Length: 117
Image 1 (tube, rainbow, N blue to C red):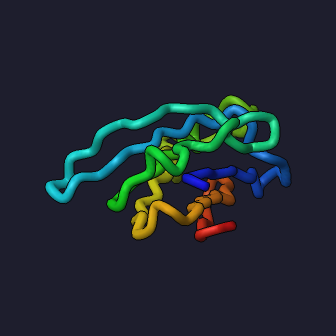
Image 2: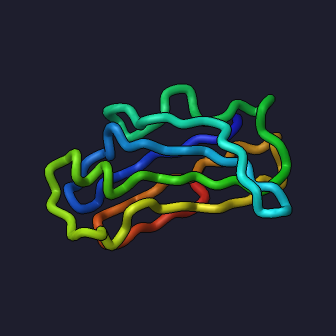
Image 3: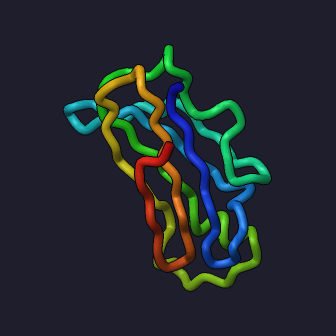
């Protein structure tokens, strides 16, 4: 259980290997604490997940995906500024005993996310 993610590069039809992701815990006042900064593996996943169940708390979180950095490193030409630089997904954890999976499907010009399993 805990929190996990994976990223798929829908522009090229491959896992988004090497994408930088920052996990933040959001406070009710709007402040954000960085909990972890990671990179996806060859399968577009984070080894061992983002947070295990013991570290997960009720509250608001955000995942910040460095999509422009990823696409530029993959050799994709992007305008300056890019249409999508960083994609931030804010979400709530209501029951830390459950598993929360937050996938991102992304191209240089659009993205989709959902609560996965």
